[in-house]
Length: 343
Ligand code: ATP
Ligand code: MG
Image 1: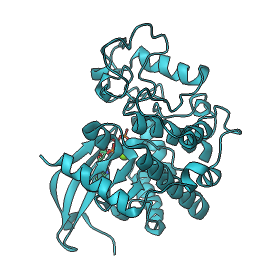
Image 2: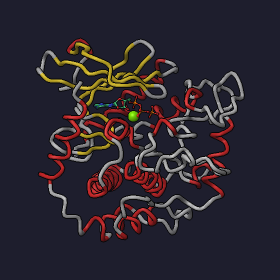
Image 3: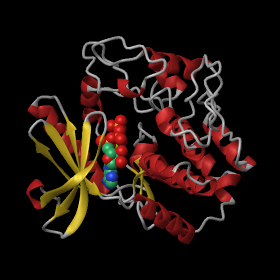
């Protein structure tokens, strides 16, 4: 039985991204808390209907590594999607609040995301297309799940026509216009893991950096807000409609605004950097990451998608196989995060 809009009372805002806003809601009928995402869909009613039809596939997606889906409906110019509420929020939010995530926990994040990707692909032939810390959610039971995967081709199209999504977690081959494959998701996972383990976006140092890091801080101490590049920034794919969300605010140092759309040169530099320069690696000055973790991330970040490992292969790697982290460890990590999030 699908959740309807009239069953829901809005409790609070959970966040907003490019083209979506998420609120915490109370379901009066089922007497439970849920999350409602509203996506702006600037399309004809027939297209909107098609999207709602395609989203029904999510009904059949049942995995402990996928955020549960409860229903969808049209809301004026939006499509509303109701899903499981994850009380610790997304990993980017957690990272911003509590700093870098312990490497052993990052290993469990990797395993959860891979299990989710394998489930989506093997069972439903779905490629996620938007793996990044804001689409990996956690709850206080210590569960880690992925959300916002590309189930509806029509929805992917209409978002691309409105906002677009060239994100900085995008693989070199995608930046160059190649087809999406599951290997592109693996690249995005690799970048996300480096960010979570190091506590900052791996491309934070600009490619032409000279003495940028002389701010007296170790990498581990620098806050994500110090990033030169905004990992959430997006570029217009469709040149006809360069409607961008305001992404300029954090581009203080080198961001050269091209005017109007809020697009900055530094994003273009970054995309070029991803394509032309060696991939990032897991490195830290203070904490020594285990070799197995470094090798795992390397295997995610081969620039040639043919050389890059598949989710199945990565699940068999030493870092994942030899992890000693139990569900109880995850729960106590989650309790610590919940404690730190209390106002
Ligand atoms: P983008 O639009 O670029 O993909 P995003 O993923 O941050 O960025 P949204 O998907 O709109 O944007 O989500 C906004 C925020 O809402 C997320 O960053 C996350 O913190 C929060 N959020 C999303 N879904 C849930 C959920 N099911 N439970 C709890 N919090 C959620
Ligand atoms: Mg999201």
